Length: 109
Length: 150
Figure (tube, each protein chain N blue to C red):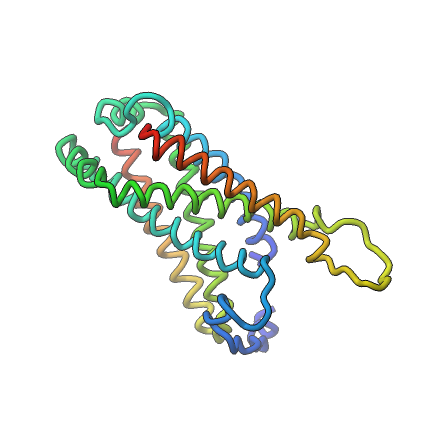
């Protein structure tokens, strides 16, 4: 994938995170009631809408974070072989974190 | 394509991470660049903690409630506020960067007439608006959700 496409994806995920995390903050934490109560958590866990929102937040957030870290590492002027290893490592870590993180809401659903 | 990428030799990054903080007369945009990175790291650290805390749900209600009790101490409350401020800074500055990278805030081209004004200075008002918004939102969050205790 070309670098410019990866950058455009960075912008798209940033916009997605902004709206989805905003929604998550407003509904889960800033509204009335106690969002971290077990009953409240268990009730949200049964909602398909929230499950979809959590999966999208995870997808967007993990891509955005991993691509951001990759950009910082690339600035260190690594040789091509090290860049390839770093790309695969970041992809592997991203997929592993997504697998763990997405299991939590799916298991609760 | 493969051969071309093998020939690429990256330019040396002589300043390294030190260059984030100082390499001469940095302008305010350069410090926003450093702040963007620091807030990004902070948000990543928070997401990692958030995922670990959410994972406690897998072991049932008792595990979840003991994790929430642990996280309700004042130190974590201060941390939550810093996370919200980091989110505000990262989101608003990210929006500014997106607008600039995509060319929306460059303005119309001007002839080079003395005294010259570079594109960075022409975009400076956007930076002041951004900083004012960040300050206002940080104060709002502090008053509304931290001091009022909601």
